[in-house]
Image (cartoon, rainbow, N blue to C red; front, side, top):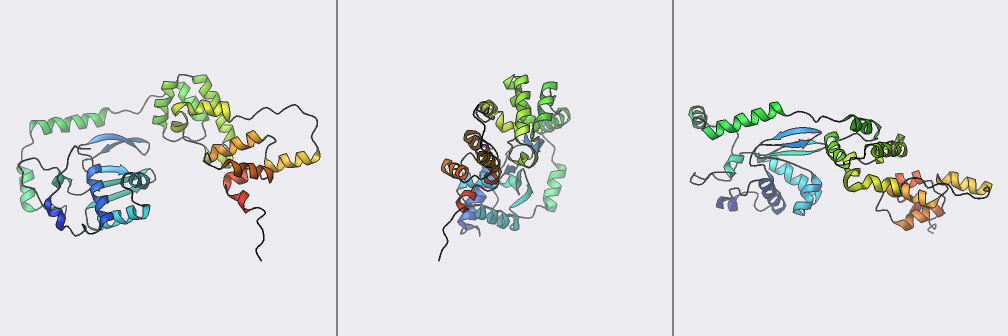
Length: 304
């Protein structure tokens, strides 16, 4: 982001000034817009972010502005209807363009323009000025540099060890980011072993609960999973009774620590008392993973 943007006194008369939530979000757009073109990583590949654009999400905007998701969505709709921003939504975030961004990046000495947004179509005078204006040496260098950057940017060259790891891992998303973390760990055999065991744990319908590689490789979380969440060896004990076998089948495992670990892997913030209650009620661990509050629905007193 630039260190500054123009804020005109005429803003006090703007028709949206009396709508505080929308005005807060509009200022956020001006603060977040890129002041120059640069490359970012978006939707699994490199993306050239243009001036006056930024990429965000509802959750990110909520954290920065204290607005609720519904207030953010409403602000985006109103600003778009007023032709102040344009929006391009995707699952990986929303690309937002501040229209007429040059109005807010006026150099010192230039005549300021009012905040009221105009149509993006240039006037006849502006077209004539743009057609006849000669690009400065600095602008030509910038265009040449950006063009060269687009041409020479290549996809990462992944190692054979990483490809083996990636093919085993259950959730293959954001590959380039995972590769950067993989290179820093330098434990190829252990990581491959981890990927196989993690894939075995999160297979079939449970695959959706697996974390992206870029998250679990960060801060040695993969090593913690190997040490803490792997199945505990079955203790040597006398032959179990038929009742114990039925309970083990109902719960999906025989050991409470393993039962708790596989539930916590999917719901780390779940109350431990609820897990204990589910164990006492002999509920299958998959039932709790699919509905963490299922234990509270059991054996409720009947109201008269």
